[in-house]
Length: 405
Ligand SMILES: Nc1ncnc2c1ncn2[C@@H]1O[C@H](COP(=O)(O)OP(=O)(O)OP(=O)(O)O)[C@@H](O)[C@H]1O
Ligand SMILES: [Mg+2]
Image (tube, rainbow, N blue to C red; front, side, top):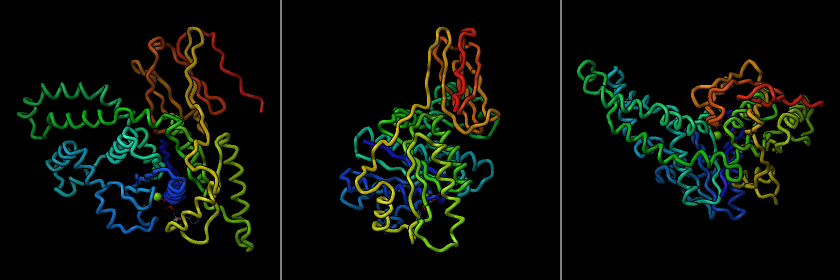
């Protein structure tokens, strides 16, 4: 079984490449599902399937070929299915604070709900072995990151805050009712969250299992796109999700004779070269710009072949890396984390209770500490794209010297 995520900046070709991979995988004989995590779904357009057919499927997988299913999540159905009490409470809250009904309903869809809904499906499919391959067409980078950070964030919330909040409310609800007319969430709200949390159990292991899950970053050979891809690369590393390929899409073919595109070609060659150096040893694939947009199975097939070649199994794990390492050296524990392309100023490390908090830019990751390392001194060094965090012990640990390259 394989779960393959395609992520990248808006418009680079994620959906096209994901769809081409899914089609190719189905042709290889794998029972394949392609699922779209983008609310602006367009799988049906790309496969040239009537939207009404998908609506008829009520947000469940729709079989479109022998071995191929597509699924576009229907958020309103997902709300009913998974978030009934939470959504109900939030819209009531917004409603009593002055928003009209319709607006309150819309605003009560919290960021993260879509991601959790998709994760619930994935968890179920992997557990039941419903498909051989699940290809995920992610929303543009920012949201894709949220997708992978949701299980850890929810776990943190449920373990650290949830019970406290629930217990305080049990005691305070009757008093609060007398002094304020802002409604407080009732028990069903908490039951709903607990239920979701229970159903999400194990999804984190699915995402971080490098034999099972990989993310492939799609980019174009252009400066701004590459820059965002570098950040995404670092974030996925931070969440221990294996990146097994980089796909550079929309290469202008060299046989285009017109000199008009010469500058483009030169620039693209330069960025392909840059990307090779940046992402090494993760393999880099390139796709040439087709002479028309990618709509329908024929174009997708062409794109798939363009990408992997006819013989290569598109579901292979093309690369496995270890972004995280715990090393015990005497009294000292060293955590090594690959966070390439990050400046020292953007990194903050501190301990909080039995956890280490690592902040990189806007992203925050809580790392549970081994008992022996709790409340010990922390020293951190950033070298050659690797963050080394030293915990406890004396001065017996010397960080590795930068290699002489
Ligand atoms: N190799 C290619 N050759 C020609 N056109 C392409 C190629 N790859 C993608 N396209 C076209 O580029 C446009 C954007 O592609 P696509 O929708 O796959 O990108 P996306 O990254 O999923 O975008 P979004 O972030 O909006 O979801 C589409 O019109 C698609 O047909
Ligand atoms: Mg898309």
